[in-house]
Image (cartoon, rainbow, N blue to C red; front, side, top):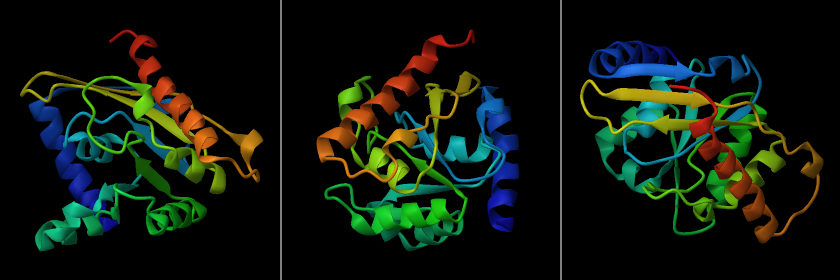
Length: 197
């Protein structure tokens, strides 16, 4: 984690020079224990920014294509990321996710599975609900608001943890998981109106 913390420290300085950063709702982040950080995803910079500004180290699920570049593979693996095949139900990525959470660490996932410009909760993938229920982990919703233009606003809004306790130990259908994942996305997008910027 030394490499992660050093990268985070340097990144924090750079981000605050390049953007007008505002982080709202930091008190909603549990200081310890397993959590899943779920955010909207419009830019390639989103995981970088969350990783820099979030106080706890995050293990991001990232598309497997990123790991094909040897140099990038070394960097993002050292930062705790792991690959997922977005074109199929990647059981290996799901197992890795659950293992990370069972070690009381932080998992980072973009519930829409890819960059999405138009807001639409129908894009939510069922995997996020499956993972949170199987790992018995709360979800911390995060909304990123930025166009990433130099010296522009960069606002991160962090909501209260979401719990699906009533579903722990139950076997749900794919459609039922998808409905719960949509609830997560709905919660993320609702953060737009929760606080004044």
